[in-house]
Image 1 (cartoon, rainbow, N blue to C red):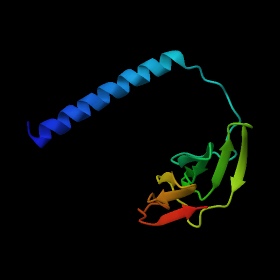
Image 2 (image 1 turned 90 degrees about the vertical axis):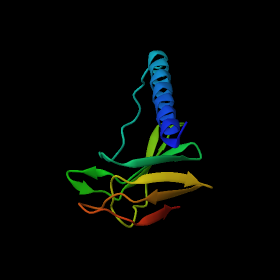
Image 3 (image 1 turned 60 degrees about the vertical axis):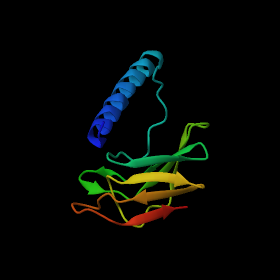
Length: 119
């Protein structure tokens, strides 16, 4: 079996597992409304640090945002944090050792190779 066959089989298995898992979860989960985010946005990124959700950047009304907001599920509250130095949407965020890293995305109509650290 060549590498193409291995990739094809892996992808198929992953998709099948994802569909099966998603179906099972959807049947046993109910949705509960929580406090809305203070800033309306799309194409933001998010990650979790210390059991709190950070929602970062995004876009609204066709302009990129630099907003960073923290959601605390224990208190169902949102807190405004310091803005990123550069507005961006379509970014990716991850957390490592209590710090949030934001990669790429766009700040308007052009791609960004900028890299940022929150915290």
